[in-house]
Length: 356
Image (tube, rainbow, N blue to C red):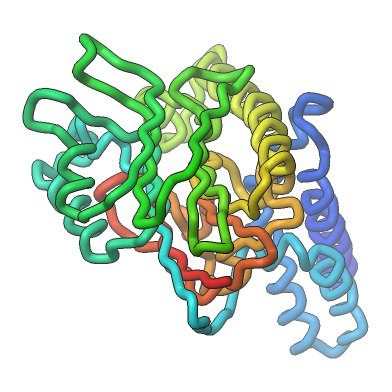
């Protein structure tokens, strides 16, 4: 009897893994509830590995085929969740960093008065040749001239700041990119859906006399959870009318749908690019999502190529939430990948070294 229960549960978990794997192909515009499945993928994958171990050590080793087949079928998704890789090197090595800096802790979310200076120090320590920042804040006059200070302190010759919001012609929010390479063209994608604080920008740069590239800096739609929403999720307590749960589900639904539309816009722009593309930024979605699958189509994921472990990029209790990415045209070789764990922002900076 016990064996039948275990076998039935194994079949269920293996089927769930395959179902969630293919769910990322479904556009949330067509059927949004399926988008939620991607959040549970790492757990389902882990349980399947536990079943593999269970059957290996048991007498009925033939049953390990159930989870083994499921893992093989879903391999393209599995390698976006966990990786074992080694570093490489090419003659033309370039470093790029992408980081959602959460306005350099302008609102003191971290409770650390030194967060801004420590974030500056971290960027200076790695000093990438190309720097992409999301949720960037700067002032023209005042103490927080972040744009001017970063360009000066890190000695960047070129930059492009795509403003999404300004107050008093002095305080500005948006996305920014810094580059050691000459910028020959810039552009901004205005998303047709979502808040104006979420956008996508790009710059065409001259890597060499005979090689240009287009670098995208992306910030897809967030779920816009309030402090009350996070408090509710942390406590996992339901109010009598489930109003808090309903609000969270509606926000998640809106986020999935808007990101699907935005991802299609990014893909369309990338396909129209005259140069090989690099796409960096905060996708606000997991690798098992329509947004990621769409944008990463025919691209190299730097984590998949050279990452180690789960590649977590978002500060939360789970060990595997990766929502920040660096994707590359196949012509580029990925030499090294690092997600730098810290609590200065709610996101971790991702640093990639690549060549061509």
